[in-house]
Image (cartoon, rainbow, N blue to C red):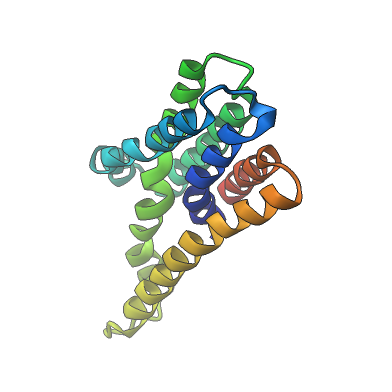
Length: 175
């Protein structure tokens, strides 16, 4: 939930951060749109990023590294917006976006190994089906709660604080 919620809320948070007066951008809405696109477009790399996960000796390490990289890149981009050229911030956001498929589908790819490793399968598909059901629940909740959390934190504090919370949540998920 931490990683998927951060991924779900980051695009909203980047737009809110770009249009906030604290960012000091003249065309904040345009910059926010570019940032959201830079975050989501690299998700198209999912099939190629997944290769690394499939070939890994221990996919948990690859996932943890992707979570940490996502959080660090998102935090750096959030702190850099308005302080560094937009192109530099876009590169950091795109780097986070390239990790995005592992925050979502990468976790889903671990289901079969988790259910089989638990030893509870016993020849039925029921535990696998339950695991897939809970996986779908985390997608739905994260897709709803991530943006909601960003909106609440942005209104209660600042958009920067909301984005740094998402970045920290993803680094915590890496652990």
